[in-house]
Image 1 (cartoon, rainbow over the protein chains, first blue to last red):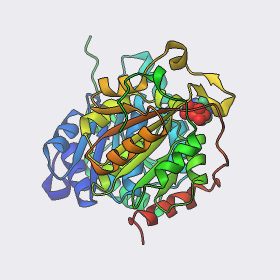
Image 2: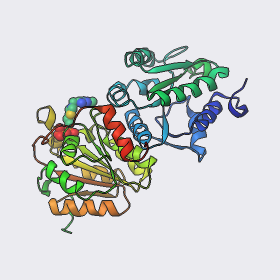
Image 3: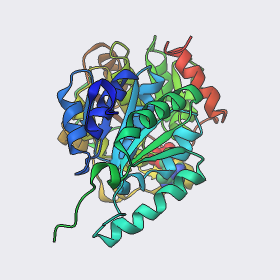
Image 4: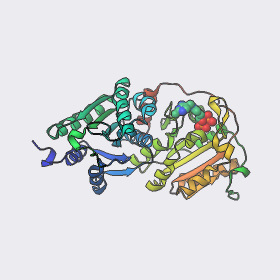
Length: 177
Length: 201
Ligand SMILES: Cc1ncc(C[n+]2csc(CCOP(=O)(O)OP(=O)(O)O)c2C)c(N)n1
């Protein structure tokens, strides 16, 4: 099976699944792997997509927008996620806000930067410590299901959730030296 | 209105609770995000409004949260009340605000030059005489102003509530703590706010 509306790439599937769930607001701090997704949402008038200076800001924006009645998702890289525990704990978790996050996973499966590899090791322990539902997407044929169900559950249970895009899905960032 | 002043050092030192009361007295259906600590405590003390959101953590996020509400509800004016130390932690958000240019966003900064609630330590900005209004203006927020005194604060607030923004209004304040503390029940605060601004019934 391909995905929503016959989409055949991971980013097309994500775009269509966000649309179907009325997730319109997409603040982000960029990552190389996320580029096709960012391009797609910025080119599509259904979405309000824009960069922020820092991931914490994007969390505040999506939290505020949800309280105002608009659904959103924060796009970031693993290192961006690592800047977030304080605001996840004291805003999204404490206030029970269904903050959606999508993280491009750097630091594993062929990483060439030791710093990224170390940062990556903090991500799942932080998510687990905060009790935040998270799924790692590795396969194209599971992408639509995982993204769709995670969004629905987050909203229905008023809980933050994190989708991790594995290099197995995206190809990751290859060693180029 | 009185002559506009452009630098921090010739603004009168005022009081957060007094100014918060002056601001709240002008409000109808505006959403207000009270930043961590004193900013939201004095908002709470100035009278409960269902359109108020009281931050109990996430230092520095009053402006981003307000921006999110402003994007979701473009027909409602949204006000962020933030401490100078908190804003200093998230200065990049001023560029984000300028880039989005939300007409319905008003940022109010209480500048006491200290981290009052943690013991009154001086901020690095106070030591360096950093001018937050100059930073906001240089970030691209054209309507960035110091309030020279209470009368000018009221005049600026009235303009900001009536004319397109984004607005950035800074007031120098004394070193007093807030007059009371907000009830710490984040889920209830969030739910009441959502009902207050009509995103939940
Ligand atoms: C990320 C983070 N760092 C430090 C603190 C501790 N803290 C809580 S309030 C505060 C000072 C806030 O200063 P300001 O915004 O200027 O408000 P004031 O207390 O002066 O009214 C600090 C340092 C925190 N809560 N979060």
